[in-house]
Image (tube, rainbow, N blue to C red; front, top):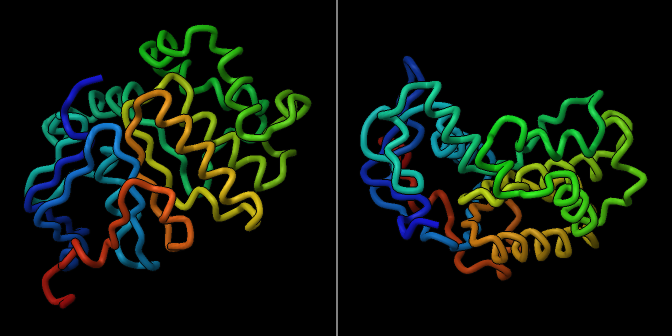
Length: 230
């Protein structure tokens, strides 16, 4: 894995069309292999920041480098390829394909990315290993995602994000569908898998109770100071 920082922000700002900036971050860095807890209340700009990091949108101004790459300088198709090859994302709403099996949902990332497929090796075996690590019973893997509980779907989404050892894993409120007993265990497994694969982890949540398990905790309101917000 490259020694470049996983994330490097310099005087970044973003505004939706016709609106004042909702993000204005002077400096922020996530080191390679670092596991960071980013905390912020609803409406603080967490989802917008994750969309920028994932290359779904591009900054209005400033610099954003992800794994050493200025993603805003890439064409949309190249950003899509970069995201598929280098990033693993646990979406807040999971984004599973409802009528594919749990196993097929986990391996989907490797279908879209040859690099992820090659890093995974035996894709089906790796998917089953991750599922077991995330406490998904093997019998669930043949069931369509739509038949799984919300908590099971969330763990399928996490396995899909982790397969193929992406350089940066982004987790958006990944424990929101889990009960308190499962939350700590889930986070420890996620941290362990990222540590084993050398992946950086950007874990975003409004719940600070899990922050002590991470290398560092940052409050988004402390680094995001859009004009007129302070």
